[in-house]
Each structure stands twice: as C-alpha cells, then as structure tokens.
Amino acid sequence: MKPKIRELKEALVSLFSPAYTTKFPAVEHVPFEKFRGKPVVDNENCVGCETCANVCPPHAITFTDDTVKGVRIIKRDYGKCIFCGQCEEHCITQKGVKLSDKIFDLAVLDRSKNVEYQEKELLVCKNCGAVITTKEHLMFLHKKLGPKAFASVLNLNVLNEKLKLAEGEDVEVEVKDHLKRKDMFNILCPNCLRLVLVKYL
Image (cartoon, rainbow, N blue to C red; front, side, top):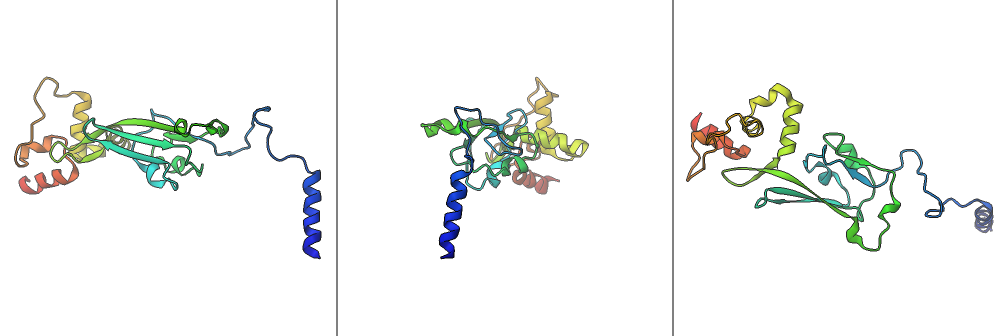
C-alpha cells in the first residue's frame, strides 16, 4: 500500500511542478554556473602534446602522426565527448582547451560535422625517423625550463633552427651508415642521442 501512496505523491508533485527543461530554441538557453559544454581549442596555446588524448575517457580525442608530411593530426569527435572536463584540467599550458557553455550547437543530423581536425608540425629523428614530439611542445618546454633547457643538446639544436644562428651554413649533416660524433648536432631522438654519447663521449 505504501509504495502506491508514494507513487501517487510523486505523480501529483510532477503534475503541479513547473517544467524543468528549457524552452530552447524558442528561448535562448542560459547555462548555470560551471556548466560544462563543448570543449573549445585555442590553437595558439595548444602544443599538440597528446595529454588530452591520453586522459579522455571515451577516446573522443585521438591523434595520428604522419611522418611523411611531418605533421601530427589531432581528431576531436564531439559526438563521443562526455564533457567530463579532463582535457581542460590536464592541459599542460592551462590555455589549450576550455569548456564553453555551448551544448546545443552539437545537435546536428550529420555526425561528421561534430568532428574537428588540427595539425601540428612534428619533430622527427634525423637518424631513425622516430617521432620525438611536436615543435611547439618542445618550445613550450624550453620556455618552461628557462636556462636549464640548454643542458639538452636536442633543445640547443631546435633553438638553432628557430633562431637561424648558423643560417647559410650546412650545419645539418646527413646520417650515413652509422651514427658518428658529428651527428649529435642533428635532431636526434633520445635513444639515438644516447648511442652517440655512449660511443664517443
């Protein structure tokens, strides 16, 4: 008997309560404070470091490295996004992605319209072709570390490319057969650089 009375009470409360849902699109949707909507990417502050892809529970963010074109292609499928905010919370720059208050913009008939792509230039090892990271990621780390970054040969080589300190000279040496001492002045992955240092220093 008691469950029936409870159900009757709930029915009466629901009947005389005002509508909880908004009247969008007839009336503009005003989100409440800390509303988590579509993640918006700031390309200037996103360094393509993969962190958001690694922490995304539904795998809405994925990446593909194209070593032929030398770019990292980041794919964001907002149709899979659960608006958990992990991408914003774990962003290493704290500015690369922010959750907006937009949600109804994602209501589309064609799901492909909810997919966005982004490209970042890759840093690839001159010897083995392994992907190191993106150039923007390394430059971000360089700024973060300050003078300590100069302890890394990789940082010095990338900085030389950016500042053109040796412009006009053939400073990049082609790697042939085996790694040699002079190859440490090329862009090498940590593994290849270790081989050079162990063998010649």
